[in-house]
View 1 (cartoon, one colour):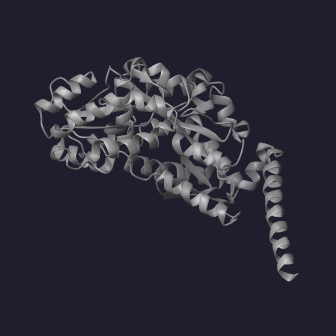
View 2 (view 1 turned 90 degrees about the horizontal axis):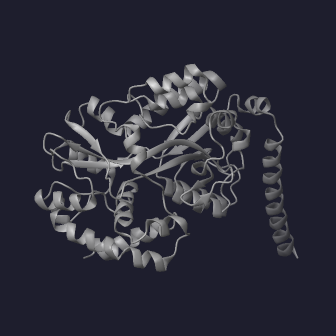
View 3 (view 1 turned 180 degrees about the horizontal axis):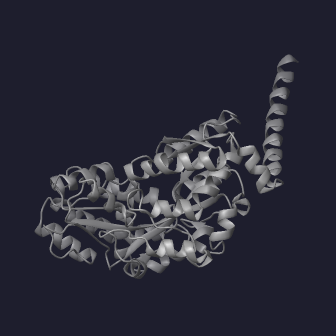
Length: 409
């Protein structure tokens, strides 16, 4: 009887916790923005995010932290961790019934957003309560309503926009390749001077998707439909042929690959390879300024197939203990002031998802007049080359197939 009573108690406790979570979420939905800011005052918000870029880290530590403290009396703790590990941590806490979580704010990517949403790990919808989002963003934009093919449903707020670019040493490469075929020719004519990060790295995965776009019989079929393993198998046959043909011409003859973008950047900075790559068309500017990348660094995008771009977001875990503080932080991070500082080459240099047409004349002029630096490709070229992302389920599928079809060959 005592055992049954104990089990019943645990069941009721679980129901009570769920009810409390639901009530807490509804309670926040019923609050005015002024009331949310009152609750946020004095809170500490733990921001979990990828920490592999020094310029991004400096933006958070040197600009965001003091400004957020001054404006809202919210303390921001930046905790570096890969997004996949962040989601694993949330899943572990949910299984343990941990309502007082350790994460308050997440820099999210599309692949992991899908997983977090499907497992009910996120708080929201909340974006309809964020003043900066409602005032300065095109809330009807499909870029904000979908993340790697998954509907956002107000569970994440757009933080930045990036496009995939290649950086190269113009003292060694007179004319950068414009197509995948020309990239292959470059690798053949300059053995050991090109490589890409292994699948599983965010940048390496993106490079492989570019090859998929370039070799597929129909990009539209990939973009317009949910993930299909049958389509993936058919459309990827030429991908593995292309990458295997390239392998013997890569750095170390393809016997090993950089494990991360950081490692690829190091190889480039040391002159072992003549190109690097990555999301964020402006990321090389600060690296050149600091003497990490050579002064002769320039940038290009492939005209065929083009340049994949995406919007990245901020989400709040369902078990965050500082939801109001996280909302205040998001409102600040989406503000014109914080977005303009993020655009500065001295920090992140990343493009903004703000709709400039919604800004007043002074703020709009500040964005339009900012010099992003000599290594940044002009906006028209980026726009002309832009490719949207495919369904997030292609990412883990391509990772596994790359290991089978390329790395293990």
